[in-house]
Every structure is written in C-alpha cells, then in structure tokens.
Length: 165
Ligand code: CO
Image (cartoon, rainbow, N blue to C red; front, side):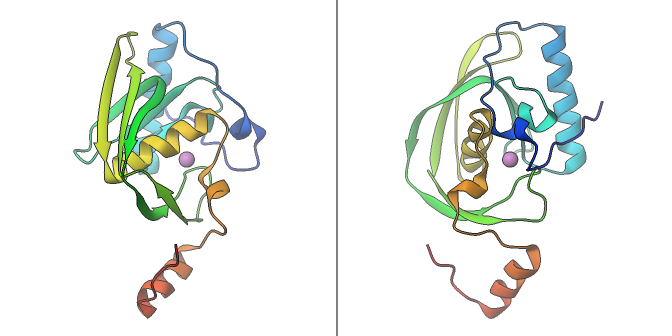
C-alpha cells in the first residue's frame, strides 16, 4: 500500500527516530508499504520518517535494483570520498552537490531481527549515508551551500561548467 511522502517543512523530518525492538507484522507491513512507495516514486532510497514513522527503518535500492532493508542501521566503516549530485523525495525538485565517502559498510538488522553487514560503493554508498542521516533528523540540503533546480543543473551541463567543490 502506498504511503504519503512527507515533504520538507514537516517537523517529523527533523526528529530523531527510535530503535525498532519488535520485528512483527506491523514492521513487515511498514517495510512492504515503504517498498511500494519507493518504487512508485521512482527513488533509490526511503527512510521511515519520510512516511511519518519515527523508527530506525531504511530502504535502499542497490545497482542491481534490489531493495535492501536496513533496521537499526549504523555505519561502521567508510573509505574514500565522492562528490556528486544528491536529491531527496522529501525535497522535490532541489538537488545539491554533497561530499560522501566512496565506500560505506553498514551493520543493521533484517526484518526478522537478524544482524548482518552490507558494504557498497558509489551511488549505493551515498544512499546509505543519506538515508541513515534521515534517522537522526537530517536532510542533505543541510550539507550544501545551496541547492539547484533541474533547469539550473541542465544549464551547467550545457555550459560544460565544472562544479566547484
Ligand atoms: Co532523503
């Protein structure tokens, strides 16, 4: 079932999420609904506060188009650096250039409470960082001096302008 995506300005996006302690049907319904909502919105990641739920639950779609469910996730290792465009389903139409680690390793629990680790790089690593930031009430636009519209980005690309770091 689709859930409504909360937009920037709603204070639920700025609150800290609680840890999940019950790995029950209610959690599974939330995860399934978040997956439907993420696919419908054509995004690559979604955090529970974006559907108004203050729980430490995150979905990330990796480069193989697989949904990774991360419950109570924490970043345990990072390396390298990347600088690139980032957006958010809760900040529609705005994009910013954000510095993130190139490789990110996450420890989390699955929907049944089993602990596992996952490591990825590039866009998926960026997505791990972005989504996990949501759980502490942070949005990507706090990390940039300014955001850009799609038109502005296309303009920059046309001009072949290098984006300043
Ligand atoms: Co986001």
